[in-house]
Image (tube, rainbow over all chains, first blue to last red; front, side, top):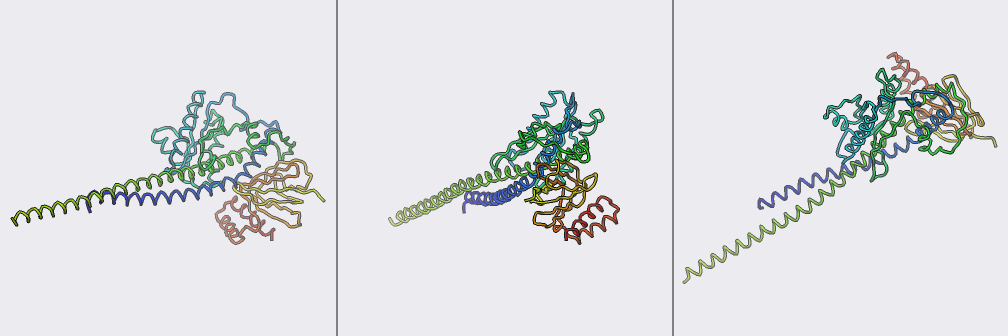
Length: 305
Length: 125
């Protein structure tokens, strides 16, 4: 076998191996998307009921609570950025980080100091590499987040919200995550979680127009709100984590699919080149044989004379 | 026909139980509360404790609930809990072990959780 042909054969083998790997990753991601979507669906009843309850307390009582009232001059805000632990997901993390950076810029223009909280190793690495200040980071669970993980993330945020701004607390809480729209579309979105905008909450749960009954609070409206809002934050963060996980898997699936397609194309091109090289080799051998034979014939013809 | 309660018991990550009931008893921070059809709209904070649901068919569903809320309006009752387990989902043996461990480690919160689960499991049998 000629050197050229051997090189092509070797490259085909290596690309075939890569293709097998990316194909497997694609299928794993595809099955994980379905699982993550199911988890999103399973968490919806809780989130819906909780939002209803929050709306009920918020609109049905005149309670003033630090988590529902807007600060007059919000000086410090927290931004929670959800990324993934692992890459190989196309522009998934880049988009989320970009959205967070735009939000940060906007908030800083408004004269607010931004405290960044990050979930996921990719986001942490991005911020550490640029030596930006990060308030807190959480890693290790982005593929399959559990409610306990959401609680872990929510705890320092809730604490910061309940602390006075002068003592290092924050006035607002924003979250940046990747919304799972469909298998093909995932968009990085940012939204303000707290203080609550009740009309917005009502709109999201399509309870708008529905007249909420006058609730009897047990033990009291303040206590209910006190207990309710941390749960609300947790549930929102849990939902965002799940959506982010589903989006990440969908992005991985798409990235791996195009990698598999590219590998297939490369294999085709290389096979053609290898065939051409083999053919060229054969042609050359034939012409060498023919050339050699005719040279022999000429020599013999010469000696006969 | 008597009025009915539409009950939904949901945990953070799943719907645990839903159906029609005639009476629901749950433990709020200020004591046990029983809700029957036609109760006035209510929103309360739940303690960790057992929740008893008397179903339309006359059966009883008991669940161990840890932290959460009860909200009732228009004969629709939702019980929101961070974690909730039906009594027949609870493995008594493992809970007993957990209880013993919590006692040994002097962890009152874990002890209470295990205790609630154990009581719910035995009440549902």
